[in-house]
Every structure is written in C-alpha cells, then in structure tokens.
Length: 382
Image (tube, rainbow, N blue to C red; front, side):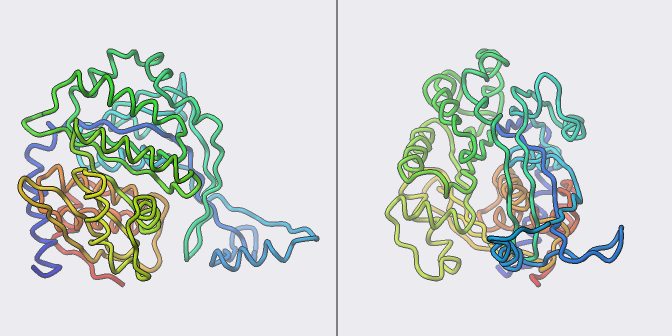
C-alpha cells in the first residue's frame, strides 16, 4: 500500500473504533511536571518584541564565550502548561475519548492549577507534588532544565499510602491499557513495577473486554542512567510480558542506547535501520511490540498470533512546529490508539505520526474526529 492508502485505511479503522472507544478503560502514570516553554532572547527591539536565539549551537557558543567573564541571558516564558510524559500522553488519550484515570504527582493534597483542565476530561489521583521543567526551545531541538526533588515520592509505598493497595489493584483490574512512562526520572518507579509483577497483575484477570491487557512503557531518555540500571529495567519488562502485552516506545537515540545494552549492533545510519532495530529489540526482550520514532518517520515490530509483523511510515514532518515539547508523548498516544483499535502495524505507526504531526502544527492534542480527518488527508512531509 502507498502512504496515502495506509493513512486512509487508518482513518477508517479509527472511525470504526469510535463506536466502542468509550468502553476501553485506560490508566496512565506516574510522573507530573509543570512545564514552562521558554525562548532565549538574542536581541530585543522593544518591550514587546524580540528575536530568539535560533539554535542550540548558537546558544552554546554564547555560554562558552562567557567563561571567565559574565553574561546576562534573558528568558521569556511563552507558555506555562501541564508537563511530564505521563500527563501529556494521558491528556492526548483522553482527548480521543478514552476513559482515562491518571495516577501521579500533580500536586498534593491539591492539584496545581495547570492540571485543572486535564482534570475535566480525566479522573486524577494525585499522590505527590509535581516536578518543574524549564523547556528552552530552539529550531534544532530543546533543552529541558528540570527540578526533580519531588519525584522521589513516586514509589510503591506512597502509592499504597495515598490510594490504598486495594484501590490500586481495583483500578488495574478494570483497565485495558496501562501506560507507564518516564522511568528515567522516576528513580523509584521500579518499586511500582515490582508491585505490579509480584502482586497486582497475578491477582487480576489478564483479559479485559476479551483482550489481553496492554502495558505501554517509555523509558524517556535513559542516557543518564547506568547500563546496569537499564538492563535491570529491561529485565523487568520481560517478566511483565508474561502477565500482559508489553509495548516499548523509543525515540531514535533511545533505540540506539537500548540496542547497545542488549548487545545489538546498530548501523551508522541508525534511522534507516529502525524497522530492523525494532524487530531485534522486541525479539531480545520477548515482549509484544517495540516502536521507534525519529522526528520524520517511525517503525514498529509487533508479535501477532503466529508471526511478527513490522512496518514503517513516513510521517507528516513540519520544519517549524508551533510546539515541539510533547510531540513524542503524542506519538505514543496515537500509536497506542492504533493498537487498541486493532489496526495493522503500519497503520498504527501512521496514527502515531498523525498524532504528533497534528500536535506540532496546532500546539494541542487532536480529538478523535480530528485524528480521523488528519489521517484521511495526511499532509506530506516538508
């Protein structure tokens, strides 16, 4: 099938799924951030007008030039919004019409005000205060400056204390899709994974609505974690896969790092090999699926009943996005939407790129109707 045909087929699949989407209970956790989207000022014309520093390279050169001297760097906050991989992904899933329960650190005992609109479309169970991120955005990328002291409170003990162990088990028992993201920053997330593997998942039915429960995991830039820590986390995913359909989402850099931890050779042009890399990582971990999403395309490998299905799709890349922070989380939401809809792997990869493509063009997540229309008339890559 050609690109446009795949996208149109995905659109029809989502339209069919719209009839039953309200019955697919979804739970996502466990992080929470308040994000400030920031420009670095290069030159200022007057009180209301300025020219931002265009690239990370130029910003870096400016900082290096200040060594031994000093520098006055002006930051302009363009937007203050909900952040964290989990809230952004969950907000997108809720925007599609999935019934979402979110568990994480969004403010305790009261929600931070940036999460109040999210609370209008999802059930929020907050267990701790949020972290804070200053996202410096440039044309060639972004720098995430984080304040993470509250993240240590995201652990099994706090979860059981605030929610009650019985409540958490009841939520998991009812949920068809569980998303767990930002392992890298949540340094005690393993305790929640162990609770699920050792106690919760064995105690609840593995099938919900006639299908095996799906668990999506995004490690979220594990470069600052040790090789041993990463290998240990991957081992937990293999254990979890005996109890549910585990899906691992990776960006390009993450896929290379995970491949190296698993002893998989990655070619010099890693992006050209993402479909093969997804196949090898999935095989090594013995999990349901692996998806890899560079900025311009994506590929996935999914274990079917009798064989592994893989595919690649060229996304609707845009050179100058309105908002890039959160694009990967929207991709994850769109890809999982495709899997929950029962779409073939290439169409699910298509819905992932459609979700991120819509988000960066509109600075918000799409509704399901907008996803259906966007796929039906998929824009070309710029």
